[in-house]
Length: 430
Image (cartoon, rainbow, N blue to C red):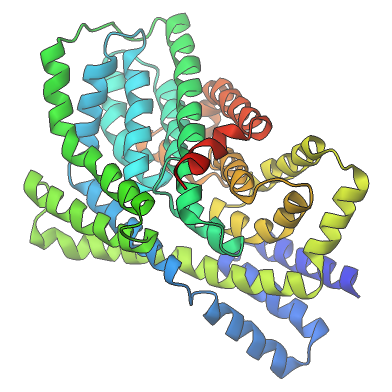
């Protein structure tokens, strides 16, 4: 009966997605249908409703709407432009300098906002015209924007790491935040290397000598924005406040900064709050329905059966990780990162734990893997945002994306095979 339940769950979910039902509703309906096979009708519907409701009953989840609101404020508050100016002053002497500037600015802004979509739209919107003006190919610039925007999902504070903490049953958010730093920087550095090589081959960009005084001036302009990272992460590590409280402080800090820069007025706030509410509603509905699906998967023993099957196949942890990563890379091509983390963490994390893989390390592997999916068709959210910002097409962007994909896959393999990249900072500070 467990196998039949698992097949019904998978078939219903896939069928609903195939006919265009939104993913949150597909998850919820597939869960209810599967419950009806195992439980009487009234208890099944009641249980589904309870699980969906209790799925949001978590103090840690309050961090998500706060960080999303902080990202919206920063997106409109002139923070992206100041980070870009600082990156340009710092990296202007390199060949293909604007590509490096774009990647560094995306890393900084993505880390501040915790959103790949926000980074792709804010940084891409500023950088695309500048790169076009200096002769960079539009598709190349778009590929750089799409891939670099995902680094903010690894470099804290990151909403998706909070979601992973929930899906894993309570892995420390502070540990996950610290674990994301080195992998996020590694991805950015490899993207810079590949983008710089492509720029040299194509003859893109002029080297611009920047005076030390200019670098210092741009750094001073960017310090108030960069201080947000110090406040948020320093407070969490020192134990002054939780991740949720840090998110609320981030909103207040970003709001004060945006008013100080005179980029946002009181009349702009209703629109900012509305946009943050709409994004929050989408994310939390996915969280709620995915918690219900996770419960029915546990009820019919899907995680245990998958773990047993993989361990029976091989006890070599690296081979198992390769299999899991291959499956997640496939999943990432048609599923957004939030539902993927919520659905597949309860399935694959028990396998990782049985093989002695640290849950923090596995979380970083999973998020980095699914970041690649955000850049791939047919459902890559960041891919669509980047293409929309640049006014180009997905087909024309694929070719310049491939070398940058290769850099992200290389980073994934390094993070997977070198646990210290993820675990060194948590072990050092916690």
